[in-house]
Image (cartoon, rainbow over the protein chains, first blue to last red):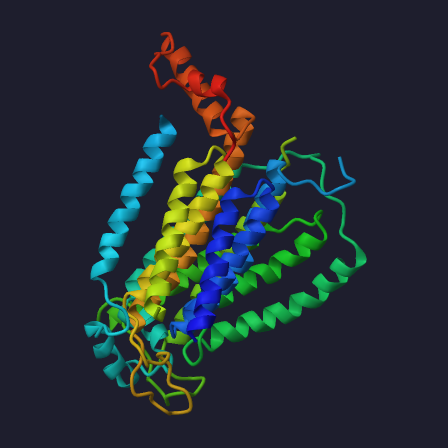
Length: 83
Length: 228
Length: 145
């Protein structure tokens, strides 16, 4: 159990640092959804299934969608082959 | 100079948080209010999910204020974005896989979202989670075919009616002489679908409001023209 | 090392990384990422504060009442906090879109410089100079964060 928590926490913290250091904003958004998923697994381990479901639906789902839409409208992410 | 002061600030913040963590213990806390609620929630409210009884019955007013904050944020976001200009270039339609997948996902997500909302007092779930799933169910067809617009009048009407329904159910309790948002109707049997009085109705109102709000916000964000 | 120490380090680390993102970034979207990370760390800390070893989730399944149940009050608070967080995120991204439309750039140093220039122009006075002025930062061309 300790090993599982240790692995999840290490992955989460490394992804959090990667959010701030990656130059490509789309990759930073993907790293942020990894942080959200790790956080929702930690919430299950802490005996809070309601909170885990909310974090998984909102953090990994809606938050990433919001970031992706905003990045597209800001012009920080273009689809290849399209002007 | 600015970097140095920022680094000093972060160092100070780290030391402050570490000092707070020294005094906090882990795994042996005895929560006073939580234990009291756990002991009486099953008979008083009748919901099998105690978090639901806390969210809607014991701290129902906080949920109302949280709905207000979400409404303010979504309305302000829509206000800031403004109306899209006509004739702006749109993204092309997606490929066949995404379009077919979106058409198949819509009824599936609708059923899953409604299931999670309706069983919020029995299993982990409830209005907020189910509302988010409903919002994505209504937004995925727009992702697949970016030309389709969402009718914002229907969305605002559903959101307004759901919010008014929540407040009305709370006010109905005051007619009987009790306080605002006291659970009404009889408690039923613990673990059955029709139990816990008016709590499922409150969660349906919350789910519809959150779903409509987030779907409208996503549609607004998708409709603004890109900046080049 | 026990589970408690690892989890407290996780909450501590997320709060610190989020604050570092807000304070040290030069791009507006990275500041917004920092805000989201800070909220995630704060929610984890709130839930850690009342954890009891050997407790189970506060739900009655099939009529079996567990002996020790976790505290439902901070779970309800964190539930609403997460939803409020996504509302704030949506508003912040809309405001970033407006800043991009008004100033043409999202680099915070340039935006600050143009804002001060606009304010000085409207007031009809010259730009006040100091040793910490944005002019000095721009000509130095430091590394991007």
